[in-house]
Length: 222
Image (cartoon, rainbow, N blue to C red; front, top):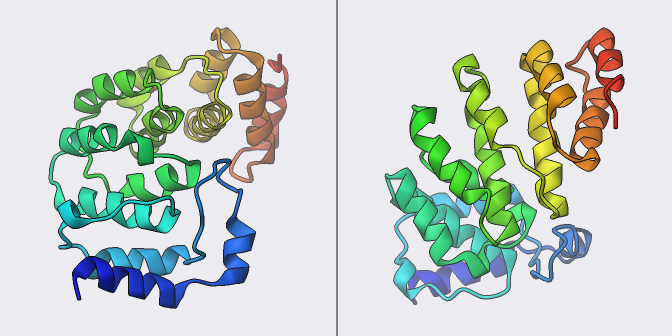
């Protein structure tokens, strides 16, 4: 039995019908869900970290794609190689759940200056989930104030819902660490009302932001 066949056997043994029904449709796509919990998927990535991806059979199941991309990122030791891998298989990079749960396997450089030009390119990709990835990666660099200007420079209007949502999410996170700077950015930026107002809504719901700063953010709602 090949590693791939063994992997499918493992996935079949771990799937849960109730969990599959619960998750189906949550990604906003037609990608099918077998119903394997995320913790089990992470364990399978460890088990099959050396699987030969050239013999891997991609299909319409989220779990198959999760293992494929996560293992590929573990096997690679270069940020750009991982990004090019995503672009090569972009037709399978579909769904916010896939991008959000696998991007953390990508080995990122310490220097945000190396990453920023790549993110500026990704944010204009035709695949909305690759555009979402550009903002997800910012979470790994947001705690360094020297990266703040570069992160702010990434934001632009986007018609895709899941890109708008991640932009608002990042802005809320930045407001936690840099309330004054992020307030001024939100106040003066040319982003549309959907992104700005959703960011303010997330700020209002955050337990990590003071009531005073929450009220301040409300004053710039569009």
